[in-house]
Length: 595
Ligand SMILES: [Zn+2]
Image (cartoon, rainbow, N blue to C red):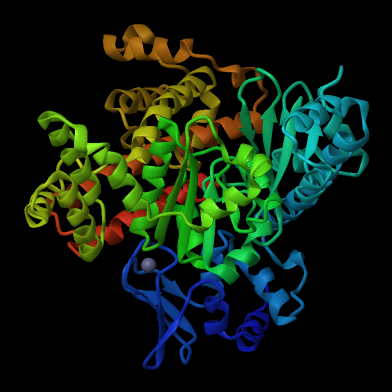
């Protein structure tokens, strides 16, 4: 660990208000500074920085601490990672890694090697795309999409080949002194029959974060290859719930304009930048997350959504509007006509794309007008349907004054008194309008498999059970399903052997047969193999995320039950939800398993 004098020097040389001010817009409030908390969604500031004490804290989510804690949380890193970042800024030389514990040292080394390997891999893919016979399919794909040589250079696009071999990148990296452990830790290869390249026969799009670090890749399959998009799996650097493509190039312009353009795909963003829209970013082919929203709120006050007009694009837009609106960002929306995507527009009419984004109407207006439809020619029941759709949208508008504004619009169009509409919206707001927790539904589905997977592994390899029980402290109560918990207890009791199915109650015997019959390729691995270890960890993590997700859903239901006043109904519950969510994020990042 760094010496305490080093920490003190760093703290003394850096100004807490200045460092935090780089992430949060702070305003003076007496002796303190105040701003919107970057760690939880809020609309009025409860995040305080005290320059005298050199401490910060949030009254909303109860987080707080010193400078290093702040950087740890905001950069999703650990103590050492935060310290290194701050040491660089303060011009302080940290003492060598040897003073850290072996586990810390390993973590730091692997993070550093992952950054280095990602950059080497990006160069390799780029070189293949530009100059090698093996890159021809990639070149053809890009040519068909009119991606220019300038785009390829600017975004450092590449191609992951697959000739007769499945380890082209691996051999390239090994030749440059990378170890197998480092290559696997960076997510660039799977440990399968030796090492196999993770990306093969794909166009590869490097993803750099807002600090210009090479964190991972998006891979686009050519032709009918499935999946169409494949991202780097979760590593110490790559967290797809956090990463935004284009952020490295857009962050400066976003900071200047305090505005961000959020699009749907990699090629939309590439086209937008080519057309002069310097603030464009996208998610990595996944649904927008709250973490991404909070990241954007640090740099922008307004977001312009530019989505496809098809039903999937509309759904994505509604979800994004809810998330951004809830975080207090001003939201505008461009829904492109069916069949037109931003990538097409950037090629055929870049001026039009820029104008559409500049003149984008407020998101609520677009949604309300869409819900109203062509009300002049509607029958009574159609108008009633339209009203219901509008009310569902109105119920989601957080600001009362803006809600009233749009209620007036609806009233005018449908010939109703807007006060009455508002009354109905406010009394029924917690009804059908309150959206279900998407996140939770998803977690539940994926993780059912995780319990079965884990139980299958333990039943097939009883010697792994003590590790799961003692190191990860998994108990029967940790399983989302009671029966699975009982089966786990039976497996533990049977140690060092396996449970005897004939001695089990019929329901458990059947469940045991089910989990043993699942696909468990890891069982072929020798004890202690990284792949087996990873499978165990992934299972435990998924189970924990599922249980935490259910807790969030439960707390949200309790919160909803407290009444339909959205803000401040129960700070304790809100804080609890935030804390469970942070735990989920921590788990997804790969931390906090051994507790
Ligand atoms: Zn907070």
